[in-house]
Amino acid sequence: MLRWFADNARDLPWRRNPTPYRVWVSEIMLQQTRVEAVREKYTAFLRRFPDVRKLARASQEAVLVAWSGLGYYRRARQLHAAAKLVVTNHDGKFPRDAAAIAALPGIGRYTAGAIGSIAWQQAVPIVDGNIERVFARWHGIEGAIKSAPVARRLWTLAQSWVETGVAAGHSPCSLNQSLMELGALVCTPRAPRCGQCPVAAHCRARATGSPESLPRRAAAAKAVPLQLVLAGLRDAGGRVWLQRRRGGESPLPAGLWEFPHCKGAARSAKAKLESLLGCTMHRPGRPVQRKHSIMHWKITLTLLPAFMPQVGAAGPHVQGAQGRWFTPAQARKAAQSGATAKLLQVLLAGE
Ligand code: SF4
Image 1 (cartoon, rainbow, N blue to C red):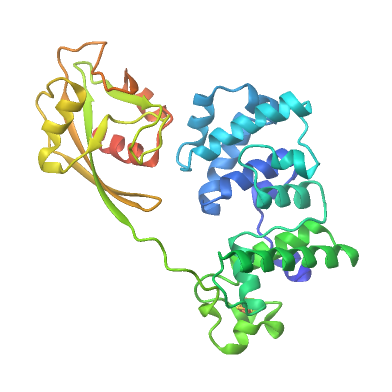
Image 2: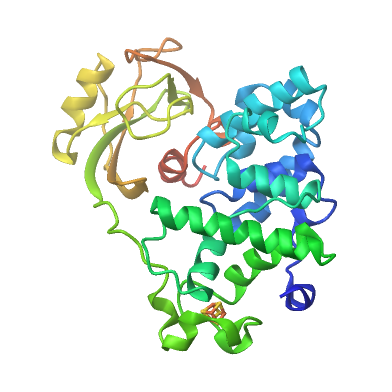
């Protein structure tokens, strides 16, 4: 495995100079996000916030802007909150102690293991989606991969893997990363390349002739359809009205700049939005529709472009939200979710 890893490891930016801060940021970004998407954002984020003190000092707005496009914005808020705690409680040095690491927001057993083994060279295990798949196939684990007994078994295997390897004189960083890399490059969810796999001779799933049958998953939660109508308001100067909510029922992430919106179908969009905004939407344009998925929601977004000639600087008022006018350039740079970015691109097309 280690020979294979040395020959095949990808040159990823977070593998260079793996300080605790750099590993931590990369691991939080990589949760639920593809390596290629993170690769682009990671370098820019590190340029903007090169160390934990700079991140802790930044405003939440600046952190969310740097996070834009990665989704799951809770991760960015928790990273920011944890950076403040590292500065306040640990003098800006990432703690080595497992209990202190676990007390930081957004850091679970996996992230703690990644930082411990990759940055601190500690013999601590990690189990991520790639390692789950490699172990399930290699050891022929038949139970549902997310079930508690299987999770316990995977962590035990991962612990034994890293401890045995370290006892034999190998680096915990390479031991853990070799498993992750094998899952990412060879033991892929579909069409694993068993012919190139360094553990093929020992792999139980391969011996059955259908390695793809593992890991087993419990039936996925059913997607729930949802229709949202959104107000694409412009003023006489071409500015766009965006708002920020503290919370509420919408599945769109709170705390980011967004179009005022509510549940409703395209045909009733104008009436619904006028009642939400408490004012008339003038010269409504052709509605724009886009599909968007967030967790189990399969959302149809209908943006209704309209003109607000007489409200001026005040803008409409939506309960529980604060809004303001943005020039097109400001709107593009505002901290926003993927759903808002998709619609904004259409609303501002050609400007
Ligand atoms: S032999 Fe195939 S199924 Fe088994 S661990 Fe290697 S790539 Fe995965």
